[in-house]
Figure: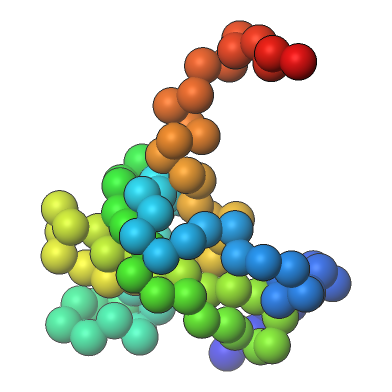
Length: 101
């Protein structure tokens, strides 16, 4: 198995994108890669648009933040990268909102 270092960015040099307890939405469908017990490899764990809550924040390859997200509807806790998530508050924010100065 090849581990992909898909960019040279070291996320750990800055603060995490999400906080503990923050409500987030999956931006992609996540399938079991063999690390999730009780499901077959390839089974869908999370669908694009599913809502969950950040329960812990770790790191991977000393480069990326990994967010453990509890998807309450499914009862699954899945590790995801920040680029695979969006804050629900940001997603629901109107696009034409004006900034007051």
